[in-house]
Amino acid sequence: MPAGVIADTEELLRTTRAVYVGDRDALALVDQLEARLHEPLRLAIAGMVKAGKSTLLNAMLGERIAATDTAECTRVVTWYRYSPTPRLTMHLRDGTTARMPVRRERGLLAFDLGGRTAEEIEWIDVGWPLEGLSSLILIDTPGIASLSTDTSARTARFLTPEDAPSAADAVVYLMRHLHGSDVRFLEAFRDTAAGAGASVCALAVLSRSDEVGSGRIDSLLSARRVARRYERDGALGALALGVVPVAGLLAEGARTLRESEYIALRELAGLERAKRESLLVSADRFVRESSATGLSVSVREELLSRFGIFGVRLAAAVIRGGVSSSSELSDALIQQSGLIELQEFVQRHFRPRADVLKARSVVLQLQALIRRAPKPGCEAVLAGIERFRASAHTLRELALLAEARADGLPLPEPQAREAELILGAAGVTASARLGLPEGAPPEEISRRVHTQIDQWRRLSADPTADRARSDVVNAVLRSLAAVASETVATRALRRAAHVDSPRRPGDPAGQDAAQQSEENEGGLRRKKRLQWFSLGAQRHPLG
Ligand SMILES: Nc1nc2c(ncn2[C@@H]2O[C@H](COP(=O)(O)OP(=O)(O)OP(=O)(O)O)[C@@H](O)[C@H]2O)c(=O)[nH]1
Ligand SMILES: [Mg+2]
Image (tube, rainbow, N blue to C red; front, side, top):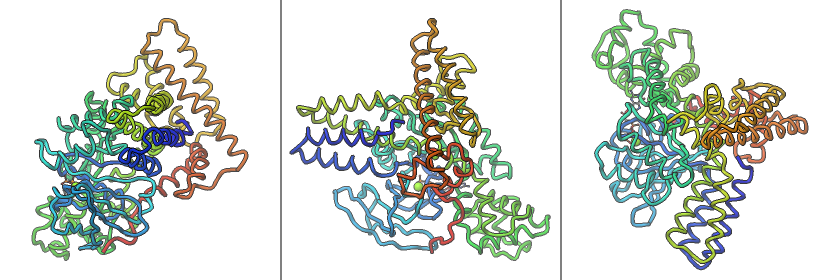
């Protein structure tokens, strides 16, 4: 990634400001874009109605903030971003805003719309004091219906507008089964970015994956197999960078686990086998009157709504396996839920590309502005946009990865597979690109990158290669050159500073140093990952 992408884009905004001097609307847009450039990446959670979006968002946040089920506010686009104190603001369709009270009901955040309907509200802005939100803005979107409705229209207007770039930089797309509407949405999302090289910034989640095997204890294994099949599916494979199975309800329950719930689950785990099995045979049976357990029906109903029958079965099995505290149970369930894999994916693919993705969004908006209201002098802005395109190799990588998934790269095996890795298919750290284990020593990385450069240079000199192949080979060489220069920088940095302190959140100066050193420091990398969303039960749940 070009080091100065943010600085270059700021320069482009300055040029635009000069061209549009005196045009209030255009200057207000430039102000907004400048702010956007310095905000965290905007990651939208999208999918069909009841795919489990809000539940997953709560699991990612580690608090039950987003409303689930049938509340009116599930039909409104809702942003979650960092604020030192809780703050809820409604942005109304008539252009005004209204503050909302911060109120909790039974551990959940209550969205008090003051009697307004979803139709009157454009979006809701939730500021929340969660550290994870300082590096990522999460956006919950209303469900897309297979038949067009007002609610799906709102999501479409926000994420895939016809005549403007998307308001989100990347999307986590939830689906329970692969449906025509899912493919159509992902195509539309990719195409809003088409002007910037058809880069793919979507991750698909096979959601509610505990239900894939009807809640059987091996459901998540079945879900994993289905996810792998979807990944290889021609239609979806070309539209998403990967497919991760996630049991969102289990993850949400685990991250907000209460001591009383742990005690109830422990009681179930301790029942004699025949009694336990008769209770857990189905969700219906679990909440029927029964003499098998001292837990009341209402306690069991609550457990079922919080964890699902799969979660209750799994929790009982895990406790029987030796887990002996609520925090250990929480960790074990999070591990099983797929949440960590999702987080790692976001960490691996979106976060390191955040600057380029944000800059791309800004550049697309500038392009739309020039189309809408051309001004004398705007050629300078267009030239800047062209320079961005040419230099944003990250976008080229994302476009080639999408092409690789759709049709395969125009190279024989094993080079095609190697090329995908070098272009960042498994992550953008030097080790991931070179197919080395995380934590490989810098010397080995350095040796490997130079061997690869020699090999790909030889390929680039092949006179029989056609244009498509040469383009890929050149892109691979460019990625390798970036790895080589990063490696040199990392080694120099280590020598100069003995870098060993992990970055503090929100410390961009320290970020580079930590990022460089983490490439070769498995332990550090894990620490930073955990800091980012700090997975684990929240010790102070709402309510
Ligand atoms: N078993 C199971 N149920 C889930 C899971 N995720 C969500 N649910 C349930 O599915 C229902 C819908 O969940 P939501 O999170 O509101 O889904 P959504 O996609 O946000 O729904 P809309 O915003 O209305 O489109 C709720 O009753 C959840 O408890 C899951 O991973 N497993
Ligand atoms: Mg929802």
